[in-house]
Image (cartoon, rainbow, N blue to C red; front, side):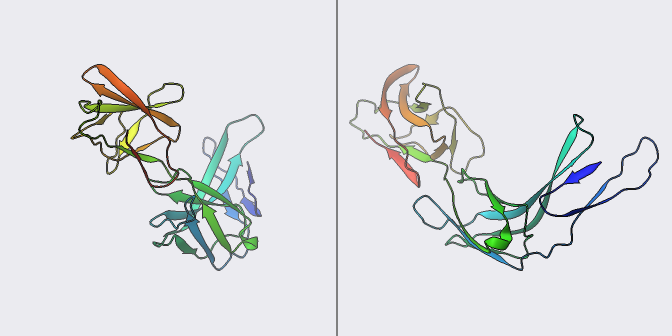
Length: 217
């Protein structure tokens, strides 16, 4: 059995009883970087707070060519960004590192850190999951609509996840001309207004890269 990793690795093997498998993988004795600082910003350059940042190191362990392969992730230091998007991690391996980013409003989930020894400070611009809300005036021709759907350019219905909710749904309910704010795929192009089983009409939508897109006639 062999191990391949971006930094140095040490393999220890021993004879084992038939029918068992024993493998040890130990990273080489490289010196970690004492501290890495960074900032996570949205497409407009504003800091994103509350993002969990986790150090992940990728290692492959596999057998002979053309046989089953196994891939392992080793997790290390973790922290949460402050309100201005800043964070500090210590210590951090100097090679083979990916920063895993966890936040429900992020569309970016990984940052390939590469060789930390050359970048003890990083600024990571992330993509945000678009959010939208529909608002209709009481005198609009669509005012009697009771729900909406969101479509992409091919006319396919997109799933929506209301803020504070864990499940996705294919429609949003309209109450007094408004829907809840919901997360949606960035390829949304149109909102369809429905009353009972009838389509009342559609509105084009262009999602903002940050914040909530409010769709109004």
